[in-house]
Image (cartoon, rainbow, N blue to C red; front, side, top):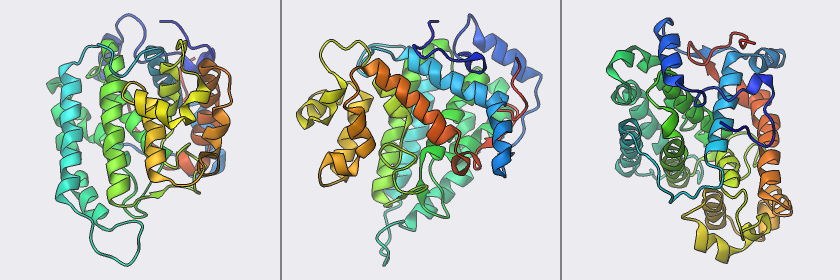
Amino acid sequence: MAETEQQPGKEEKMLLLSGSTPEDEAAEAAAGVAFIVPKKEISMVPDMGKWKRSQAYADYIGFILTLNEGVKGKKLTCEYKVSETVEKLLDLLETLDRWINETPPVDQPSRFGNKAYRTWFSKLDQEAEALVSTVLPPEKAAAAPEIAVYLKESVGNSTRIDYGTGHEAAFAAFLCCLCKVGALRVDDQLAIVFKVFNRYLSVMRKLQRTYRMEPAGSQGVWGLDDFQFLPFIWGSSQFIDHPTLEPRHFIDERVVNEHHQDYMFLECIKFINEMKTGPFAEHSNQLWNISAVPSWSKVNQGLIRMYKAECLEKFPVIQHFKFGSLLSIQPAKP
């Protein structure tokens, strides 16, 4: 598989979905490993070095970059394989969506952070393992408690009723773990981003809207739109070598309305336009600046760098990340 234009370093080999038969390797690796319930390992700023040297970091960034490469130049509406596992993941996300409908917001004095979210979350907390079990092959059933932790971490924080890029990263980690146990495979790449991650985004947007969730961290610092980051990375990759649409076009509402079904990046802009008022340059300054970058490949490279610096290398985000047997805190193999 070709590497991204921004050549990943040694520690970022595109591991999980590349190579001849990663599912065989994953299955062999997983067979020799006892699954464990993931726990936090980064408790102080000096621990960040341990995270950046870890197998989990190498696997996570490799996974993000492999998918970034896989969606390059492709529309959401293009044809791709949809496996049984992908269908089961869509059913799982449909269940989370249905629970929102069954858990309407409650009347409360505070406008933000509707407490009904906690009722919704407690349902996921109780059911997560059972939901994950439906997605796993029978011989990997023992991995459910480990993988379910990432699913629970991916929907926001039930104490603060907030959501941010750390929660988004937990969902990517959840998908990464499903690859590592061989439930998702090489030819699921496009469906992972275009079907599963896209459906996850729509459920998260519904959560954010319904329960008026707060952005995690200080306003808008971690995410490009207060909440998300990955769809901007993968969405900019979709546009690489596009014959007509350039970065300057995404601030044009007409372009957004015409093309958002095909491009994840424009779906994100559409959501921002619906949620925020006033001049775009004021409410989404970082994105406004990005619209001045000449090419999508430069946007894509810049966003990957920014994601590492603003999300993966920030203690307030990574202190919440959990490590188990599949995403290990142990140093990466050279």
